[in-house]
Length: 401
Image 1 (cartoon, rainbow, N blue to C red):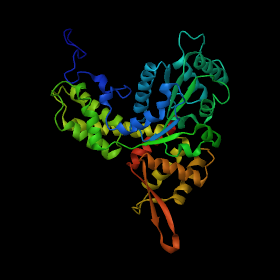
Image 2 (cartoon, one colour):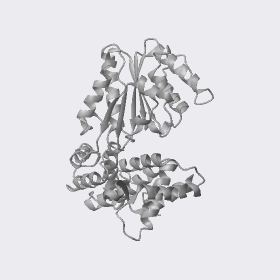
Image 3 (tube, helix red, strand yellow):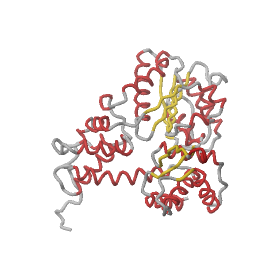
Image 4 (cartoon, rainbow, N blue to C red):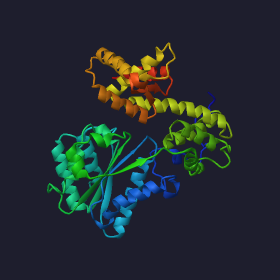
């Protein structure tokens, strides 16, 4: 390589402010598109907190990329600002339960986020019991805050409801004096609340919101609000509409739509193109879909993967070109897979629930079929994805365990 030749690009010919396309970045108010109603409802639920009163507890459901986390953080930030104007000290703590998967890790994250230098409380990363973390959290809240909101993202990954029980009953049990706590639980699983412990349901008394997927017009607006991530006149006119149509057709996921747009720009840059063309959107879409599906598979529990594996096996071995497979037939293959994996199979009812979750995530399609007077009504299941792609993703996941 010649000494004068630069290995790195010093100034991007495509991007002006690439940070605007980062998924984890909390955008300004004018860049939040298509969620005015949801933001208003969430703000109403938390509104008592600006006066130092207890906010409503909230459970938010919706598929990945529908703005649940974004809106929760945004409303919580506005809550803190507005409460300060009323001389109320408020704060919020965010926990990604997909990363902090135990009660101890989650409550340690909450306590660390809320700890202040003025508070004489130490929060070690490890080495103390779960109850000690709670006691230190109560000490921080009692000394420092009037009201706190705890956001538990992907709360279903925690495995049990203990943290909800502790937070929702903190004042009732005398752990908190004047400080109040509200909880925002976020889940991709629409049935999460149904499986909750009855005591938690009673103390939580939560309000429930469902965030629908974005449509193509909303996705286009979301990407238009981030157009200044690119240099002027770099995006060809058809790129954003094309990307929005692709994302809406498959999943209505704003994160993935933004990912596709960003990756299309990276493809243009790698090809030394002076513009981002529609063909780059198509290439970026294929890349993003592979990543999306692999991410979904990695997030499934072992028995969710076994159930999906059973449907995949049936689909690949389908010589009769069937339009779907009955639950009982699928369950038989699932039991065989469990035996091969050395795992005790779940009940037929639980496997039905797992299949419902797959349908909610658009991995499979479920349809009720009438078999007439002889067979009655039954459900058939069909893969929405290429079975070979599903098998490859499952195989990689099994090998990682």
